[in-house]
Length: 386
Image 1 (cartoon, helix red, strand yellow):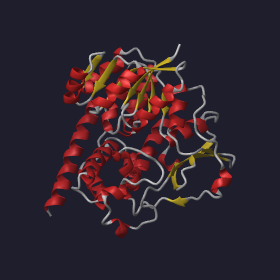
Image 2 (cartoon, helix red, strand yellow):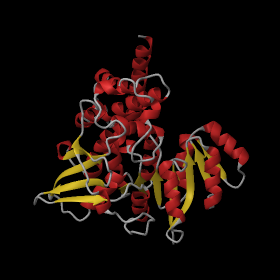
Image 3 (cartoon, one colour):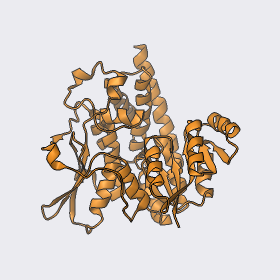
């Protein structure tokens, strides 16, 4: 019987590639539910193509338009609608491809039901941290990472006994501004920041890659996924994006996961886990590259990575504050209300203004998220008025 999937964020980059993976494995995978933020027309087209009878849209206005245009099934609305989609669809796995902290509630819903989670929404662990991992342990649900770096680590660590791994090493492409200094980033445009040299991603994730915040969020995610202290997690810039992650072992060996940058590979691994199936990517030809290069991450110029590491070590509400401030700052940059070079400043000032508190509940995280968003918005407004 095929594994029944609910794909959240199905009209985004990860969701579209996940549906491509599903279409190639009709005997192993079947989509039973889809969700999107507001792109109701593409969502309906996906539902028709894959025979899905239940969809959800986070945007209630978009959901209303979808319900008028589509009479072949049920349309659910809002965050509560996405939660109902998860709890009622009788799926075996949820792929969470939602962007940003909006993905936390669906993650909690899936894990709370004991449903295995293919996780592409790194913010679920950045914001939810120990609460999310404890929930998975309590219900017995598996969290299988979809990010290419964490999928690589998941696979590399699978055969290692506890105590044998000394370090985790995440690789970063360096983004479009690799090698630049702060003064060279003063007049960066939105189009320049969106021109990623390796990956094709959505706007928010692409800007996070340009600031190296994406790698900072992945650092925090790796800490929670693999229970590894921050001092044992490194980031190295690898422009070719062929090595996705490495692990260093107690006997001096270093193991690496290599492959061409194609998100269908980690998506397929997560959706079929623990099996592997064919993915239409060409075999890696190292001779064609000739050389793979590496360099340290510049945490002075790209301060978001440093801020993320610091927030992770502080713990409590600090990662939640970091993520919320980043989402507000990135949105302001994309809207032309904040300069690229100011993104890290807004995040740092928000963290300084809101000291970390202990986390006791998801409700408390929601309150911390709201405070951080308000403070970041105030800081952006102050800059505009200056």
